[in-house]
Length: 72
Image (cartoon, helix red, strand yellow):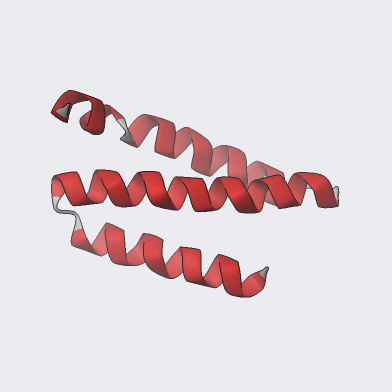
């Protein structure tokens, strides 16, 4: 199980990059998908951060999620 959580940083990174790409789209539909993918990436990063005791990363991801929700 630890190995799977260690590897979670890679899907989290891919989802984050894809979300940023979609949020920059002119299409409202794509921007909406980007919003939800950013929230998914926040969850993935938080899970990985808890596993690695990366407390600053966890605070950052919670903060970014709050800002994204506020912006929505």
